[in-house]
Image 1 (cartoon, each protein chain N blue to C red):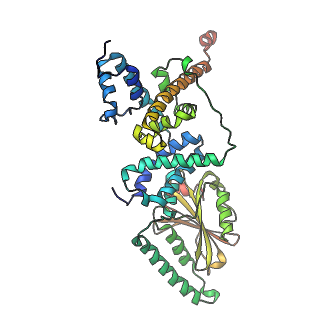
Image 2: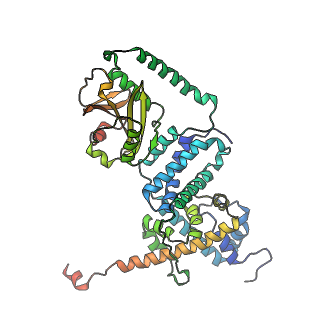
Image 3: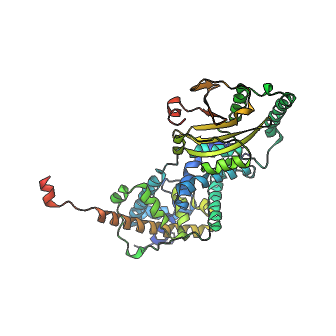
Length: 253
Length: 182
């Protein structure tokens, strides 16, 4: 076939069209113009190009059918909320400043309380724990890790209380991370897990001696839109918190 | 153009393709998840550096690859087995058997492309980045991207053709007597 000056060889056209996206996103790119024009004139090249796009579409379809684990997105969001931006405006700090002032006020009021009878109540503890979760769709964690042992080591390093024993069914859950919280001079810990549905399950632990008299009914209750269950084990108070439906929660806690 | 990034929206849009890219690089679901998380963590910390939202996608893939290379350098003793496909003696690739392959077979085939060409091909299929964006992500000239895509895709076809042939050999034909007896 005789080629005019403006035509390019089929080999050159194939070389260029290998980089042409199968979804047509490059249709207006001048880089491909000559090669695309050549494909309209040359039946062999047209057949090759049709086959190439079909191959590319099939490969992309196969590869894009791989689904990330359900726990990945909540884990990423947890990381985003815990990541300190290195460039924040003053307005970004205002909510944090307000929170510090409120917590300082609470801290001062607790410091004035001297006797054991004045230790914080269970409801105060629950409010403080749920406040840790109220910063967004996921809490701000100190450590993001899928390794439960690593998270518990971290809590030990921070002198934060740990659950004496995790529920057996937790072995099926992916750990997201943990956080040590100094609440009015008393350490509490938070460990987060990802449920199969993608919802998070939070486990707060505090030394029961840090609180006043503790009485609670067994079972899951609803507090401010959260499903909450309390459990006392070897001197530790465990509080399981999640927004997952109760039927899913009871499988694990 | 804006400096205020909607991080949740960006996560929702890009976490799946980034995970797939990470999986193709690491060949490990756990490492791919960690690498994807790490990439978004860096985005959250350095979001102020991104002045043009349209560049976020390219930035994310560049950062993920950079973090992967950093982790590979940290494990210099990590064993690496390379496969050199013989593209001159490859069986012809037809569409029907190709369609019957599962996603894992295609992911595995990608991993067998020569490392020089592999990343460009992975980005081409998994990120839907243009050749210009792939050049930016890999920090190589556009001509090099074209060359790597052309040769890398040829290798992919060759590897897939061999996979199909090997799969067909695993199918044991039913004995005629057994067929009658049944």
